[in-house]
Length: 310
Image 1: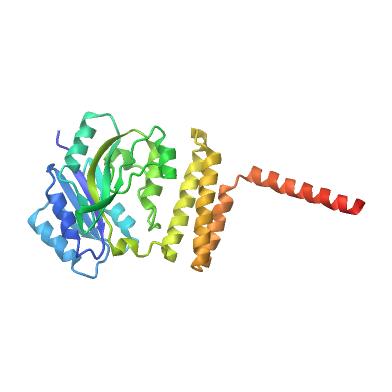
Image 2 (image 1 turned 180 degrees about the vertical axis):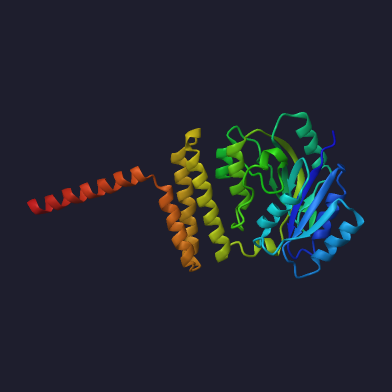
């Protein structure tokens, strides 16, 4: 068997790095792939570069995001999936690099194991892949949903190769998120299936550059993080009968929201303050809140009576 793999990449103004990404795909030891790159309205020469690769190798397919589609990487990913034909799906980013064996190794796993997707390790780098530092190799867990939610394992956008049938009937990336979108997406997927295989090997390289650092604590970025957390917590509550430690998770999210609230106060992000406070209330068990308020009222009543009797 030689299944077609669809590699789906959103891009925007990546003229300085996208050639390395596309070259790493062209150099894959597995040959039966299509690479669908969706341009999000680049204002530099990115699309011209895409066209040059498409002209040389018809496995590359460059598209422009339709104007009716929402702007952003997630809308481009979802549109790329609509246009894809592969039996297997690999999400990837336009500034990162694939190991030459990435696709072949993961395809072999899917062909020889009864699993829905396969994940691998990755590593961060600056400028060249030899200048690497943070290893992303936390992919194995006996409780993957719980560990993914709290960050004990990390799948990341580039990590999994999916069987198409695993994801085609579910909502894909949330197009209103610009941060934490893969965390929110993979949380939903892991509630759907935990049947995956983890390769303990570095098969992709995640580029760290100024554009990936800028904006980490902007208003839009922080709003997206808060929204992603609220969506994930909503998903958790829908699936709370699956044996998750809800007390721990409520405390975990409460701690995160307090951190976001402090950051929003520091940067005077008042709209984000409101969303964060809403998230805090969502984390509090309503029955527990009522009991706490009753305790406060009872204690206040006792103190008031005692003061009258003096």
